[in-house]
Picture 1 (cartoon, rainbow, N blue to C red):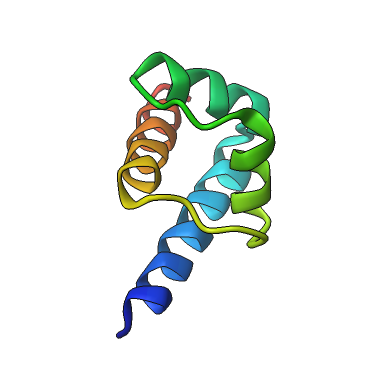
Picture 2 (cartoon, rainbow, N blue to C red):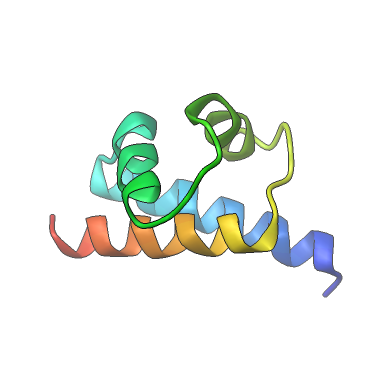
Length: 73
């Protein structure tokens, strides 16, 4: 699996968990920002729609944020 494939798999997993947990993009972004993320909400939304990549650290922070939010649902 290439780096691009793993990035796409993580993006798809984040989006899937968001759907299952009824987590909004805004809610995810606020949580992500509160744990140290600094990418803007528009960029996060573009990433979630597959329109732009994010640095690996930001992808990981989004994954942590969505996992923690999902665990609280």
